[in-house]
Length: 360
Image (cartoon, rainbow, N blue to C red; front, side, top):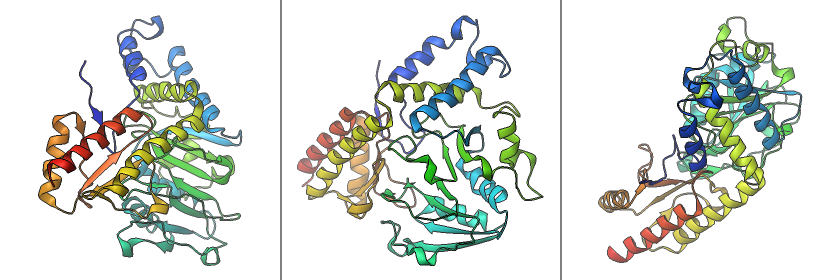
């Protein structure tokens, strides 16, 4: 069977063993005589799936008992609104560090319901770094403090977290959840779209401390209240059943392969292979400050648009696909999420070296 190395920023590669298991289960899951896609979300089989998905995620992330795990829809983009609607409970102010496109969207949405204060930004350098931030500028009365832990488009990553004291730290982890170890206790709320490291598009995971549930703004729609979903175990309405089933198997794959610490080590190895090549190349250059480089998304450029186009065409011809940079940035971007094997990154670097020789 022909398989490419898919460097897409999302939807991204999934582990082959997960896809093979899904294929085997397609017509009849667990002897039920039907696919998970056909199954009632109220059935015993599906109850086992969604509960198993939650428990395995709790296991691999070491999620404390005083946090709820929610499987929602609407993507991380819906969370830009859900977070302020539910967490603007006292001052109706929130602090943000602006590190790119997605944090800007979160800031804009929060501004509709309260005051969004940008305490640091790297927009002046086209988001090629994580900006320095001064804790003295943080609002001690803010209802929450928001960061995007990994910036898919810009290719930057927080290597240390801001200390926010009693103000809940909220993190959009869409493009690096499960890729490295985080202490969930440091966060009030974590949210992430599934389509990078967890499963197919259509599932959004929210991990929220229980004391932050239940104080939504009066005009919050029922479906946008965290309490609605927490009270019903993510089953208030029909959840994205098949997507959650795939997520469950991805969580199990992580657990079976040494957990997040082992996954992180593998991700660091892949990133080093690619960054080491870029640092020594005379043709291709990374675009991100070295101290803030992402383990997941690696943007790079040649400085010549025609050469970029040739590179992308020839790479695709040998099965190295989805390497085009985001339309707002240009150049190239290799997204090397958890399911990308070391062999895929090695194949990319080998191709880049030969392309460099052939196009001097």
